[in-house]
Amino acid sequence: MIPFFAEELGNINVLRATIATEQTCDAAECLQVKNSVLVLKDQVVANLNSVDIAVSTQNLVVAQPNDQPPPSDENELIPWEVKLSLLKPPTSLRSQQNDVKEWWTSKLLLRQSPEKQMQCRHCAQGFLDSAIEYKIKDLPSEHWYELVECWICHETKPEEHQARMKPILARPHVLLVGTTYFLIHPENIIKNSLQVDPIVSKRLNWDRGTLTKWIAVNCSKCQNAAGEGQYCMEDGKMQLLAVKLFKYCIDLIPNPSEQPAFTDFLVSDLVNTAKIHATHRFLIQGRQTQSIYALIWLFNWDTNIVHNNGFIENNDHLLVRERAMKVIYLDCSFINPDNDEHVKKYIALWSNDKSTDHLIYPDNHCQQLVNTLNQSTLILPPFMRKINHPAMIFTKNFSIGFIRRSD
Image 1 (cartoon, rainbow, N blue to C red):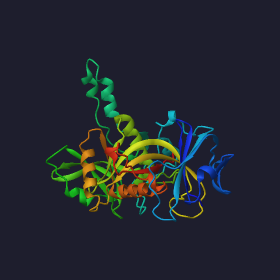
Image 2 (cartoon, rainbow, N blue to C red; image 1 turned 180 degrees about the vertical axis):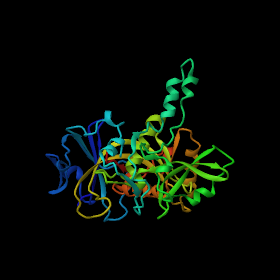
Image 3 (cartoon, one colour; image 1 turned 30 degrees about the horizontal axis):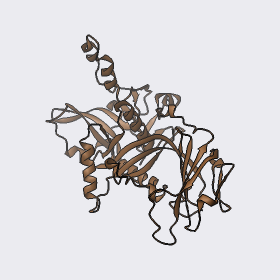
Image 4 (cartoon, helix red, strand yellow; image 1 turned 45 degrees about the vertical axis):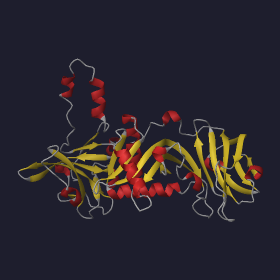
C-alpha cells in the first residue's frame, strides 16, 4: 500500500494530496491519473471515485516538498505533493460552515415516550425521576446575555430591559434543554444519585465570589463526572438549587437513533464561541484538577480529509473521506524535561491573552480529547505534523490535528 493523505480545499477547488514512495521512484514521471484514479507503476494509490470525489488533471502538479531533508536511511519513504483540480466543490460549502448540529434537542425529546430516563453513561445509574411527565423547552444560546447587552446598549432607557435580564432558573417538572446539557430542578433528580466532586469541594471558599456556585457533581455509584450543581449556603449547609447534566456524560432512555460523542459537543462549543467572541484560540482545562490539557487554535472548522491510514501502518486500508475540523494544538497533558519550558511558556502566553477563551470539561474528557488529537496527527505525513515555520512564532512546535464532525 502506498500511503495517501489529502485535504479538499473547497475555496479554490483543489485537492492537495501527499503520497510516499520508495527512493528509487520518481512520482513526477510515474504517477498517472485516469478517471479520478491515481496509479503509480500499475499500482492503485487512491480510487477517488470510491469516496465520491472527481478530479481533473488540467492543473496537475507533482513535486517534492520544499526544504525536505534527505532520507536518514535507504528504506525511508520519500513524500511527494500532488495537486489536482476538483471537478465539483465539496458537499459542505463555505457558506454553510457556521451551521453546527444541535444534539438531543427538545424536538427529539418530545418525539420520545413520556416516560424518560437520563442515566450515567458508565454505570447506567438513573438520575431523573421518570414517573413525571415533563414540559420540555429549549434554552437560548449560552451567550444570550452578551447578545442582549449588545442589542440594548444604545437605548435611551436600557435599565428597563436590564431589570428583566435575570438568570434562567431551573423549574420543577420542566426539562430545559441547552446545547450541551439539560437543566433540571433538584426535585426531579433521584435522591442520592449525585454527589459533589470531592476534589472540587476542597477548593470551595464561600467567603469569596458569588452567593451561588456551580460545582462539579459525579455519579454517586461510579464516581464518574455527570454535570454541575448550583449550590448556595444556608444555615451552614449547602443547598442544591439546580442541576446541569452534561449530555456527553449521560445516556437517554429510550435510546435515540443519534448517539453523539464528547467531540460532537466540543465542536458546538468551539464554533459557537468563535462566532460570538470572534476568537479562534482556546485553552482546554480540566474541571477537577484545573490543569491545562491543550491549547487549540481553530484553523478551519469545516473541511474534508481523505486518507488510507498509510502513514500510520503498512496494512491495506480502504480510502476514507471524513468531515473534520482542522486545528493547530499543543499537547500540555504530559510535561517532560524536554518540553517543560516550551509548554509553560505558551500556557502563560495564551492565559494572559484576552482574545483566548477557556473551555472547561471533566478531566477524563480533556484527556480523551488530547488522545484523539494525537491520534489524528498520525494520519498526516511526518513532515506535515508539526508547525516549525520561522514566521509562525505564536505556534512554534504545535501539532496539526483533526476533530471529526458527525453533524
